[in-house]
Length: 76
View (cartoon, rainbow, N blue to C red):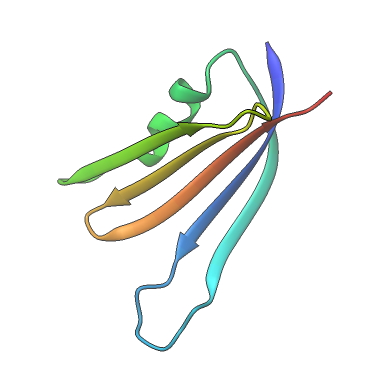
């Protein structure tokens, strides 16, 4: 199992409000794909996965119009 810092950003959809909710925690998992599944709940779910050269993995998620970004960065 690997340890990751997981940063979950929930974007505010209200106009003229650029604030977002940010949650940070450490997790242990064998699969970031499996760990992100708990956030893919809704009638209409779309997401894109981006694997970066530095090893971080970013999921851009839209669940029923709520936009989120979840970033996994492996910890040493």
